[in-house]
Structures are given as structure tokens and as C-alpha cells.
Length: 500
Ligand code: NFE
Image (cartoon, helix red, strand yellow):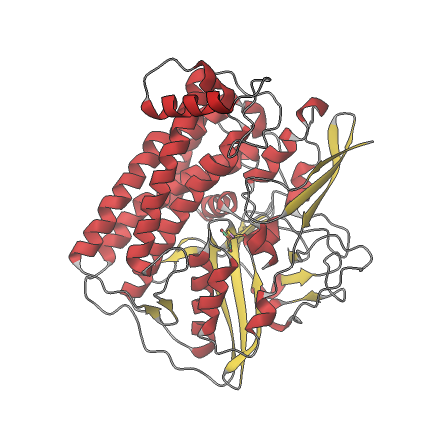
């Protein structure tokens, strides 16, 4: 029995160790290990509730907007506060901008390199100045094995990279352009948020930024640039990856159970619907069925707690059976996958027409069956498809903002109360649960997307979604775990968030 260990898993956010056991060329078991403790929930106790959106944004520089909004919603639910229409649409715009930034980051700068033969640069003979610059840099860094020994292209695992010059060079050229496009998305977010990352305008009751027609037009022109990139580069690159690596439509299927809290508040409901899928079609979400299990986490006690009354975690590193700093979130006792794939699956099952109709066309072009979406390739496809959909929907939200109209209602603290703030972060379902005591934070719990996806085993020894998705993956010992890395990265891990 052989083992493949990736430690650290690079080109992700945070610190992750993946261990797999291999027999007869396939993964038979896997362990996902979050490798650090942070303690945000503990440090929030006793503070003013208004500190929470500011502090929880610091859980992550990639998805701070989701944490701020989840936190604001939790406080709004505990204090009975509403948000005016302008505030809702401005929140959608800043969250949308953050999604676009995050999805483009994930594909080009974190994941695509699993599928790109970077050394193709060395044979480039064209005139594209970006590729020529990269080629000169590559030549100066080349070692005798024709391997590029420098970041950001390391560590590069050996493997079956498609020897297709158009794909490899196109992806590298778009890698560079994507840096600029992400800056544009950050600028959009900063127009609403005052700055990025860690916006300054997101507070309970709405958004404090001023709006006028010029600001909205500035946002729109930047959005159009990002949209063009998604349509001209991101979507075609994902479609080409699907053609070059069709086997990944059947690798990394996972638990095939999906959960979404729904996201992007419009008139009376969210545009992307909430719900769960477990083989019986779309089901309504029941928050009372969520609990976190600490049996294999480095935390004192084997708890199975609902987040509204969970004890604050106390680290214990010498605990028998423990192997991760993540807790294990479960819904009705089972692990669920969250993220863009889950959102698209839930929306399709709920029959949301603005998602179902374009999905049919997209899958035809990607030559993917809907039953192949639950796969490594399907996660990339769902993320790109979602980016395109959101970018288009953002034009509607821009139209819905009334320049100069109020975007916030006054906040008044409550002495006591419980609240929950649910949102979908780029990587999936995010919930913050708050309890107020004497006007201060009595308890605060976050259940974060990557905690769902990268959770360790629970008290019944059931594996988490990524641990399940890895089982059955065929591995070539010469590739040193490339196939494992491809499956893991398709979930877009952020272990900084996951351990919070
Ligand atoms: Ni740190 Fe996050 C997103 C949240 S992750 S990136 O998206 O919440 O699990």
C-alpha cells in the first residue's frame, strides 16, 4: 500500500495537507488536514456587535465581502433590522465584483497550471509581447532539465500535460491579463466598499457609500471590461480544458449532495435559490439540521453542536483520533458539497429559468452531460459559467440602484437576541451565528464554505466531501500526486477561512 502526501498543497489559500492511501493505482482513502488554528470566534466574545463585520472580514483577504455581509445579516436578524433596496443592490454589486475577482483568481492563478505545460513558452516563436517577455524570463531561469525552477510556476508536478501550443500559450497569456482584470474587479468593489480588500462601508442596516450617476457609470465601464475577459478568455479556456482533459469529467465526483443558502438579495428573495440536493430533487433548507462535529478536530470534547449554541472551541492537540483544525459540518448527519457547482445544481433543480436556460447551452458547448457536472472538470465549468451569469446580472443591479437614494437604515443595538446571517461566498455556503448578551457578543460561530468541503471525518467516521471525492482517483506514481492536486484544487480551497 503506497501513500501520496501533498504538504503543503500549494496555489491555494491557507495551509492544507492531503494524505491518500493508494492500492492498485487508485486512491482508496484520503484525509484532509487543516494545519493551523486561528480563533476568530473566541476573540469576538464580549465585544460590541458592530466590531463583528470589521473583524470577521479579516478571516480572509479573498472573500472579506462575504464575511462582512454574513456578519451584518446576523446582526440584522438579531436586532430586527431591514436593508433598503439601494443597500441590497449595492451589496450585490460589491459581492458580485468579489466573486468575479475570486473565480478568475482561482482558474488562472491557482488551478489552471495543473493543466498547462509551462515549458511550451520555450518554443514560442510568435510576436506577442507578453509571451515574449515570459519566454525571455523563462530562458533566463531555465535549468538543465528544461524545468522552470521559479515561482509562480512551482512546485510543478510531473504529468500528462496536453502538448497543445495554442492551449498552453493562450492560458499563459491570459494568466498575465487576468492579473489586470482582477485589479479591475477590485476597483469595482472599492467603488462601493471604499477600499479592497476589507471594505469600510458594509454595516448592519445597509451600505454607507454615496452613489451618483458618475460612480455607477465608472462601475459599469469596469464591469464591461471584466465581462469581455470572461467571455473572450475564461469561458473559452474552460471549454478547451474540457476538450483536452475529458477524463476529468468522471474524476472527483464526490458525495453528490449539494447545499446552497441562496445569494444576491433582489426584491423579496435571493436570485440564486437556497436548497439542498440529495438524490430526491430540490429540497428546502432546514437550518435546524446543521451541526458541527468536533470528534476528529483538535478541539476539546467530541461535540455535535448547532452553531447557535456551540461551545467556543478550545484547542487540544493531543486528542486521540484528531487530525485536523477544521470541524466537520454536517446537514442531517451527512456531509454536503458547497460552492459554485452546488449553487448551479440547486438552481437547476429549483428550475430558476435565468440559470437553467443558459446552463443547457453552456453544457452543450462544453460537451458535458448534466450528470458529469459533479466532477473535477464540472467544478471548473460551473465556476466559469457562474462568473458569466453574475457579470451579466450585475448590469441589472446597476440599473436598480437609484443614485443618491438612501442605502442604509439606522441601527439600534439590542440587549439580547439570536441571529443568523446566511450568504453564499464565492466558495460556497457561509453562515455566521450570533448571540447577544447585555448588548455585547455572547457567542459567535462561523460555518465556512471550505469547512464544509474540506471537513475531516465525523464521529461516525464518515469522510468529508473532498476526502470522498479523492477515493477512486487513478494515480500514476511518476506524477507524484498531480491527479490528487487536480481534484483538490477544483474545490477552490481556502483553509484560512476554513479554520477561522
Ligand atoms: Ni478565504 Fe471564503 C470564500 C468564505 S472560503 S475564501 O469564498 O467564507 O471557504
